[in-house]
Length: 268
Image 1 (cartoon, rainbow, N blue to C red):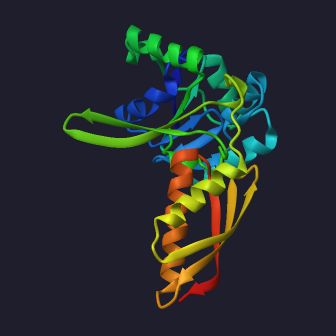
Image 2: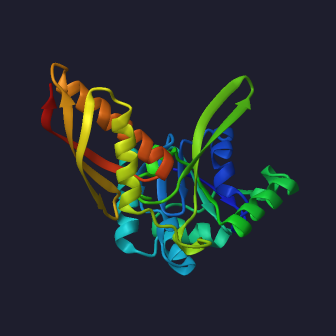
């Protein structure tokens, strides 16, 4: 397995440039902040951006937790990629990661200054320092479960090289250790979203009750409704479920675990 390293100080845009570097060198597997990523999908690991302090985040990123390291090592052995790209703030950090995962030392080290302009690095630092925003080289749908109850913004990218076009998605998060303040979304807000969806479906005549359960993994919603007699109740329930999930995840940025619909009565 040939190891490549992308190195640069924290906040200089390494995660933002990771997919570009991977495509440039024909790499489909990346290790970034505790995550093992292949072809835009998370295979194993735990994101350092979920840690409560920056020190804990560093420890997570360099795999000091033996159980965490073992999980990623096992998955690496299973997929056995020809090449792998490791992101780190320094060569020393990358070497700690390779040692923890029993990988060889980097065959090639790419510095962020070699692939980013001075202006790009300044912009990246500003986004990190002033807004606390971090990029994860994964589509939003891939990290929803790792960041429940977080606001997550998708970031599409387009890359072109020698006639080859690449379109993908990254995600922007604000880690707990770098928040400007705490944001809480009350259960009442989710309930109002749910009722708003019901009002737009003619076959639903009344919402009796909405139960909201907020957990570390996301939000679970239970709804009791009155439906119009003579319609396909299953289709109505499925339409309501889908629309509720889309609205809550889009407007609140929360991971919806499920929406359980109970049809309590019929409107004749």
